[in-house]
Length: 112
Image 1 (cartoon, helix red, strand yellow):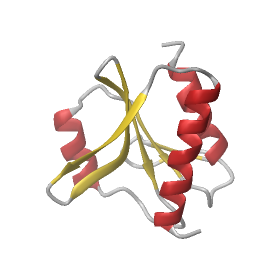
Image 2 (cartoon, one colour):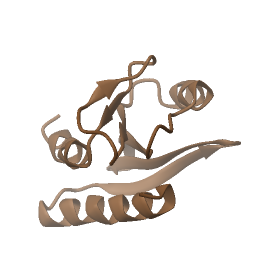
Image 3 (cartoon, one colour):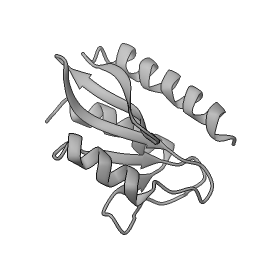
């Protein structure tokens, strides 16, 4: 699956889950210079989580992660990849998860 298509599709799925489950989240993105995170999940104007979409063997760069952490030191972040079968953590400790696990991540935020 091509990354741009997957990002758009996954965003629509996040909106669908939010609306169906009546969750009080809004979505935006984060960008600083050449670094970006696809989705910031916000509740009451506070960033509560972040999701990065990747396909194939693409990875989040260490520089992007470090820059993101300077701005959002405690915000949980996951990577959603449609091409994996099992969740795994990278060398930075960021978990890469399946599509279903990524959508469940949104639902589980409600209980935090």
